[in-house]
Structure formats: structure tokens, C-alpha cells
Length: 443
Image 1 (cartoon, rainbow, N blue to C red):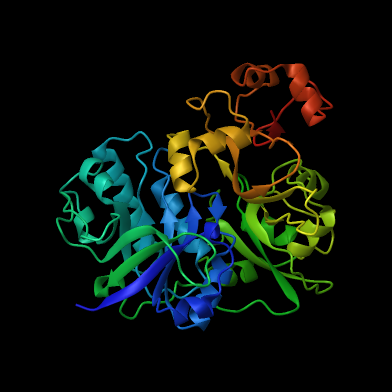
Image 2: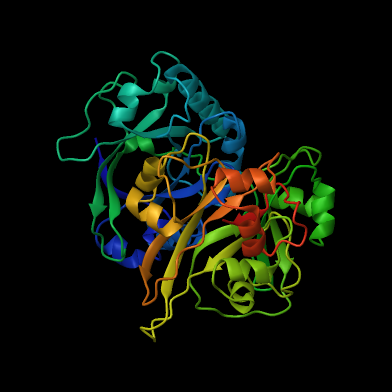
């Protein structure tokens, strides 16, 4: 049976020299595409184009958030919509490594719902990624999960141990998470892949294959509750027919909150930029480009440049913005911080599970987010996840919270052991008694 050398990557890998990766002998790469219905990896297109240009086989995975909301089917459609313009050589992968508080039976049923919807919605075969201990202890045997190809993680040199679902069968094996690969300036997951991991003839996710021209920029818009396709078309100066064509939407009356809509927008001017970005932010109600710039310690000009925004006074709720990396290497006296990601705590998360996911430590998360009790985090709380930090001052990272339905300023103050007066001062609130759902506030 043929065996292929592979890696899997996400935004944590940073920019990659794919020519050097290919010269080293790597043949396959699986790229993180999405998580839940709120996150699209900002390096997705860059990784895809670089890997394809250098002859690698490419696949995609989705980090699954089990629980009641968003549903598995919604996450499946979000995943497929995210990769709608890319050709996959591999089966589309469900990354299954959280329980979300579900028992084995419920979790397995949710995983199957996701996999079946991916196959129905894309017309492409799906596969499962998990690790040996998780497969041995958190999944339910006999429901049909074993029908899907398995990509298993177990670090070591002896091969994966058997598990009750797949026995000793697997299509891929992740055997290291500390690999050193020329062209990648970060520890890298190392894999072996076998023939079962690859597709036969179905390699294109249905959708628009038109590349963005030099006279247009691409906006990825997240559908909000109450949106219609005609309303989105009117807002962005396009047509319903064009949105249907670009996004492969059969029924223009059927879009759902969390769905990613791709929009081509004409540019007034073309700017070349060498500004790096390492995170994304979904614009919320009340945001302005200047308030986002202040939140992430950048400038309006940098945000406008890296996102090709011609009018800095015109951004939209649901628009996904790239966040520039701050890297003032010319002066040792100036802070040099890279915001790799801003993560919204989900139901079932713990600080230790978040630390494992982002290859950091609980102590580091506690420190940079000024968390008083590491056992107490809340769904909707926003954590900053660092990539690197080197600063001569002791400026603390901000701690943010996304206002949930039913929250009041007093209930938030009580939850985080602070005062209403402190929240009003830190957030420059004009109406002392009013906060709104999805508002991001400093704590």
C-alpha cells in the first residue's frame, strides 16, 4: 500500500515557503479551513495557492464545535461554503476532538450529521480526524462512523493503537506535532497518508471558479439573522443573480445565519502591501474602522490597506476583516506583538482545551488575558491568543467580552468581579444603562 509524506497546517504555521516544503519531500498537506460557523482561516487561500503551485496534494479540515448551536448541519454547510472555490485531492475532514458536554451517543450522532451533510451539500466524500484516546473513550460503536475513512493522531513511532470504532484501520496517521520542516517557521504536525484518504474523480467543491480580477476585491460576508440575498446584493452594489452564481446558491430565498457569502467588489484603486496579517475579525453592530484599529493596536490606514478598503467609513456588519500584525522590528523600545487570533469561548470549552488547541499553556492564557480564576471562563468571552510577544514595557493585554442576549451592564460587572463604573469608563459608554447583543466590551 502506497504511503505519502504529509503535514497539516493552520494559521499558526504562519507564512510558508511551499517550494522548500516540496523540495523536502512533503507530498500532501491538509489545511484548516474553518471552525464552528464563526472562523475562516486567514491563510487558507495563501496556503492553497502555494501548495498547489508546488505540486502538493491538498485537502481541508473543519474543527468541529459539538453542542446545540450551531448545529452540525450548519457547520457542515459553513465548511463547504468556505472552500467552495478550491479543488480538494483528499476527502473533506471533520476534526473531532471535543465533546461539548455530550455523551458518547449524542456526540457520535452529531458527528454523523456533520459528515452526511458535508457529503450531501458538496457531493464529495468525507473523513474523520481524531486521536486514539478520544476514539477509545468518547465515541459510540455501531452507529456508522466506521464507514468513514479515519485520520488518527497518536504521537510516537510504533503506529496507532486500535480503537472500538475503526479497530486498527486508518487512512492517515499523525505521528508528530513537533516536526521541523524547511520553509515553515513553527513546529509542524507530521503525517503519513494512504490511498483511502484521497478522492477518485470528485475534486472540485461546486461553486464559482472565477478568480478575482485585478479590478476587484473579495469580501466574505457572514449572513446575519434577518438578512435576505436581495438585501445583501443591494448593500454591496451587486445582484442576486451574481451572488447565486458566485456562491452556488440554488434557492435565493434560502440562506441562513452564519453562512459565508462571497462578494466581488470593484476597487477604486489598487494598492500593493507587504503588511502581514495573522488574525481575522467579524465586524459587529456599532463597529467603526477606527474602533477596530484601537482594539487591535493598529491604524485605520493599515486596516484599509490590508483589506483593500477604498472607503474607511464604509464597513458592514458581518464583514470579515484581516487584522495586521504589528511588528516594529526597527526599535527595541517599541512593543512588537503579533495577534495570532481572537478566540470566542464556546460552550464546553475549558482553558486547558483552548491551550491545547492553540499550542500554548494555561499559564500563558491566564497571563495575557488577565484571568483571575482559570477554572472560570464563559461562552462568548473573547480571549486573545498570542503568536509571539517581545516588549520592553509591561502593557497588559486587553480582555474582551461579547455581550450575550439578556446581559446587562450590572450582570456583566457581577460576572467578572468589576463595577459598572469601571466598564463605563473603559468602554466610553454614552448610555450608561445600555449594552447590546454581540457588542464587544473591554473588561
